[in-house]
Length: 462
Picture (spheres, rainbow, N blue to C red):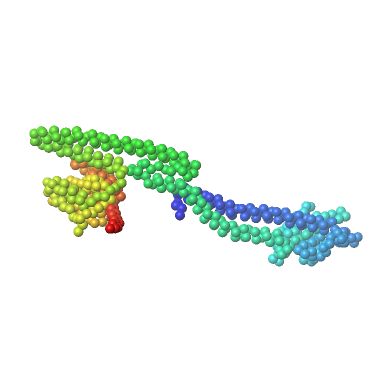
C-alpha cells in the first residue's frame, strides 16, 4: 500500500488524476468533434437535396407548383425524407405527404437557409428551410430528414458513442491505475531502498552510505550530498570519541599518582575528603573510558556466561555493600551451571557492576539488593530502597544526568553505559520502580546458540 504524505503517494495521486481526466475528457472531446462533423454532413445532405427540389420546381400557368418530370425522381414520401414548399404567406403549395405538410410548414423561414432539429412522435428530425425564387416570387423548400430510421447509421453511432466509449474506458482506466501504481512503485524502488538505508543509521553505524546506483538522476545529487555530510559527521564523531578516550586515558595516571600521594599525608578530615574526591574522579574517568570503548567497539559479540559474571561482580562489590550495612545476594536459576548469552564478556561485567554499584550508592543501610539471573538470558538487579518517581524514569539513561547534582556521587554515566552495553549486544533494558517501593532493572540479552553436535567419526578399519 502507498502511505499517505509520501513522495510516492503524491506522484501516484497526481498521475492518477491526470490519467482519469484524460480518460474522461478524451471521449467527450471526440464525441463533440463527431457530432460537429455529423451536423456538417447532415446540413450538406439537407442543402443538396433541398437544392435538387428547388431546381425541379415549376410554376404552372394556374399558379400551382409542381416538380418537373425527370428533374426530381422521388415523388411522394421519399423514404426517410419528406418535403413541403410554402409561399411567402406560409401557405403550403406543395408537399410530399400531409404529415410533411403539417410538420414542416410551421418552421421559421428567412432570407438564408435555416437548419432545425426537433422531435415528433418519438422520432428525431433534421430540417432545412431553403429559399428559392420562381417567376420573381419567393418560395421556401422545407426538407425534413427522419434520422431515427434504422438506415441512418451515422446517427445511431453518435447516439451510442459516448456510452460505448465510457463502457470501454472505465474498465481500462481501472487496469491502467493498477499498472500505474505498480510501475510507479517499481520506479521508486531505489528511492525506497535509500530511505531504508537512512533508517538504519545510528551513532554506532555512521559508516553506512547511500547507494547512488539506480537512483533517478534528479535524486542522485541529493544522495551524493547526503553521503558527503555523513562522511563529515563520521569524521567529527570519530575525533570526538578519540579525544574523550585519549583525555580519559591520560587522566588515569595523574589521578592514580594523586591518590598515592594523598595516602602519605597524615590522617585528617581534609585528607579523607581529598581521597574521596580523587577516587570519584578516577571512577568518572574510568566510566568515560568504558563509554569510549563501547562507542568504538566494532567486533562481533562473543559468548559470555552471565552466571559467572554475576558471581564475580557480587563477590567484588560485597565488601562495599557490607560497609554500608546492606545485603547483597545472587539468585541463580535452579539446576543451571551456566547461562551463556551472545555478548562480550567485558561488556556484561561492566554492565552488571554499574547496576549493582548504582543500587549500593542510592539505597540506605538495611537495604536488600538481589542480582537475579534467569535461564532465558535475562537478569534483574532489584532493591527494596526508596525507589524512583515515575516522572524521572525518562531521564535515568541519559548521559551525565543525576537526580541530585549536589551529592557528588558520580557523573551520571553508569546507566547510560548499561543501556549502551545492552543495545550494542542486541539486548534491551527496562526499569520498574515506584516512589517508596524499590527499584528493579530488567536486562534481556540474546541466548547463545547451542553448539551443533559433532558428527560421528567412522571407526578405522583394521
